[in-house]
Structure formats: C-alpha cells, structure tokens
Length: 241
Image 1 (cartoon, rainbow, N blue to C red):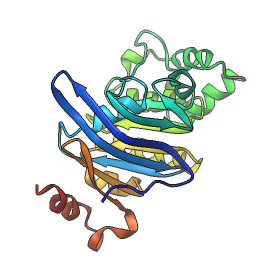
Image 2: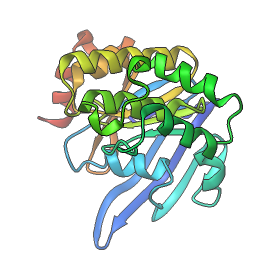
Image 3: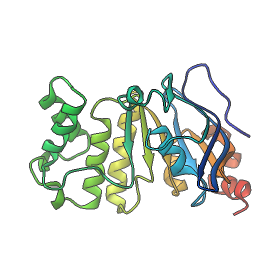
Image 4: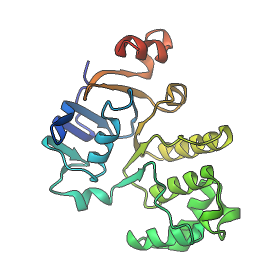
C-alpha cells in the first residue's frame, strides 16, 4: 500500500527514480506527507531511505520524476526550498573551534534572522545546552553535538525537518534528550520525516510509518492502524525479515 496524497501535502513525490551509474536506487517511488505529520522511514540498509532524504533536502538531484516541497519544484526551485528546511544528517555540520552560541549565530546570519541573540538563547535552552553555550563544540560529547545539530536545524523555524538516523551513536540519556527536543519541535507544527532503524523509538515519536524496500514504498501505516500495535511484527511481515 502506498501513501495517499492529501490536499494539504507539504511533500509530494511522484514516480521518483534515482540512478547512480547503472544502479537504480529509487524505482518509481510515490510519497506524500501532510502538514504536521511525523513520518518514520523504515527499511534495511540500501533500501533508499537516505537517498530519498537527500533529494528532499536538495542535496541530490532526481534522475526522473516529480518532487515538490512546500509547493516548490525540485531541483528547479531548490534555493526557495532550502530556507524552509531543517536537515540533520550523519554529520553535525558544526564548527568545532567555535562555541555553541557562535555556531548558531553564524547560521542565524545566513538565514538573516531578526533578534539573533534572543533566538540563539531560546534554541540553546530548547536543546539543553545553555550552560555550555560558550564552550567550543569540539569539547562536546557526541550526544551534545547532535543536540546542537538539532538546534542548528530548527533555528529558523523550518516548515519541514528531515532527519537521517539522528539517534546513531547516542547513549540512552542523550537519545531521551533528543526525543524531548523533537517532541517540542513537532508540537510547534513542524512536519518531520525521519529515517530510522530503531523501531521502538520511531513508534514512540512518529504518527506514520513508511517502509521502503527495493527503492519503493512497499507499505505505509498510521500509528492507529498498526496490526495489534506491533510495529516490529508488521515490519517483519512486510519485509519478510
């Protein structure tokens, strides 16, 4: 079952194809996300999750197909889309020799934000780093860097937040802090698409679950319609894992 398009969709993908040389990674993929949804992308390594996110984030160009984000066409209108996105990937995209607040000030200037000092302080409080705001980021733990990366991604109040395995390498305390940060962001109306291998954490956060296999969405289910509430069982049945 593929996701059904909605009139209030902020992400619309139709017949998306992505090839790397002779290797086809995405095969006529269909995908849509409505405003305010938190969608977890699930699937084995190599299924196409990161490739889809990179195309939505304007970091990779589709080979074929139609991609619209917040009403803009990709890749033709990528500059307009980038201002509406927050992206968290495997790299934190932070400057290690700068402090947390200087990192956020740098990005705030790129987005031409008003009241930069107030916004930076609010974001540091949101991600629980206000007490370490003047410390160089290279002195941070992996969990702290990931929290600051989330802060960087939400600094400009994006319409859409794209997350690629954001819990990778985090200990339990850091993962819980990240979860709380994501919940606060979502409560403000942000639309989230998150690739994850952690089904239990995805179940706790997302309200829709799309499973990618062989370059296509092979199943899509909302939280309320997971058979017996067993996401792992559903995943194994769909993927034959």
